[in-house]
Image 1 (tube, helix red, strand yellow):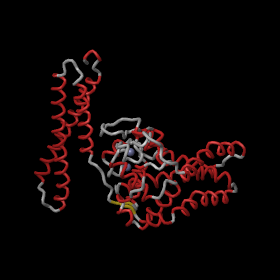
Image 2 (cartoon, rainbow, N blue to C red):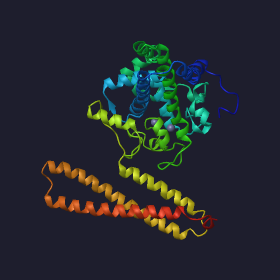
Image 3 (tube, helix red, strand yellow):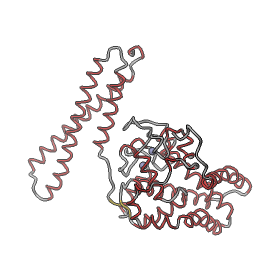
Length: 386
Ligand SMILES: [Zn+2]
Ligand SMILES: [Zn+2]
């Protein structure tokens, strides 16, 4: 492991470029605010640019290019490339390469570039400031991205693009507003630092705090609070389980502005082929995890036989109904297309509808009793345990 012997050499450029803006944001931004103040124009542009950077990373670098969760119009790709340069998180080809290795080798301290196993500081920031072996550029996993003209262009002109977006744009907006220094500090430095550290939280905090309803065997967690700061990327356990889904927060009430943005763009024909994991598969995965956790807890009980029997029976019944439900939904979709072709009789349609309704009620009841059983099981006092 890397930390066992001498630490690798520091990358001074990275340390300077990533370390200096936070100091300016902490010291000069409040000082200028107290002595000169910031106006509404500056605050509005601050939020616009912050959202632009974040969305370019979450919808562009991450879900579009790293995971191919949907397809995007060239106009959108150019905007993402500019926003990515504004976020100063390297050009997308390297970003996506690191990220694909993070998914492939998650928690392997020698191969995951920002493994959470090496601690909060390392996965948040530390991995970028030393020449760690696991972070060495190996771009063999991003051949597909070299075929994207926008990304090749972004890579070639990355330095001028970052200067243009991080210094040129704030100066221009400051010039229009009559306050260049205020604009540089707020739109340049504070916006940059917040957008970077919000993204870093996904690699650090979202691998430390939260729940693991889809895959308890890895560190990635679902965390609604981190989702608020990261434009929806906080549902990280789900994401690591179904990385090709264009959504991270799959429930309607999950705060995931990136998914809303991608969906909204599909109505404008700017995005297409949005990939999703079926709700049936999600539910089956969650129930399997709940079942395995409960059975593991059973091992610690004094008399587990009764509980084990009950858990097994409820679990298998629910799974059976869920599978029927998935089959029936498939038949339902097929029915729609066959009806269009006039190949489906009304009698068959009525029969299908009846089965569909019956199964819906059965599924609802079984979900309820599974939930009640898990609830009772979780209330077991320590006296039941060995
Ligand atoms: Zn992760
Ligand atoms: Zn990812």
